[in-house]
Length: 115
Picture 1 (cartoon, helix red, strand yellow):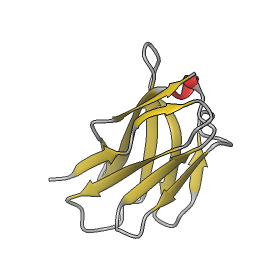
Picture 2 (picture 1 turned 135 degrees about the vertical axis):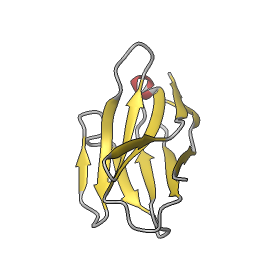
Picture 3 (picture 1 turned 45 degrees about the vertical axis):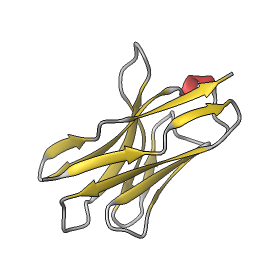
């Protein structure tokens, strides 16, 4: 069974940094694209960044400039490094992978940035 598990969220002060991780288990091949989305209260879920199995990255407006997505050495592990965090970055951050046409989501990890 395929599972996406996020970790690393928490409370951080404005201007601080945080790294969240996504591990996809139950898959024996390299997933083509793994992405991070976020959803703030009362707002739609939005793309933060995605990365291909070859390392090609794509950033949504919310992730440009301060966030960096990368692949870990373990298969299908992806990190999102977030720097210069702002209170408006407060959201639940979700990992997403499309496998055989199915869009799969993790349970999310809460990131809270205090002012």
